[in-house]
Length: 83
View (tube, rainbow, N blue to C red):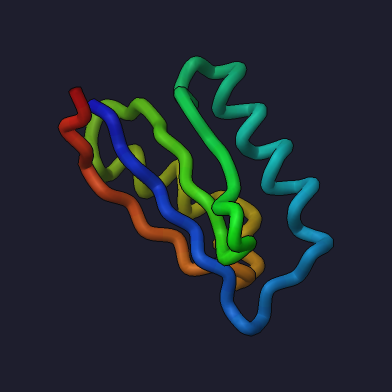
């Protein structure tokens, strides 16, 4: 199943977390779980599309994202029936 993940920067956003976030996304890509990823052009955050067995697995994955664990961004996961 596909899951759309949105990340929106908080007032506590830490620019130093960006490298760790990109490394996290690269690990997902190497595991075959990441399809697409990218920042919003207005620099408010970004989105990525992952594959997971279920919503629980998807949440477990994305809530370990450094932008979430550092409270730099609000991370939301949506089950997505994209065609």
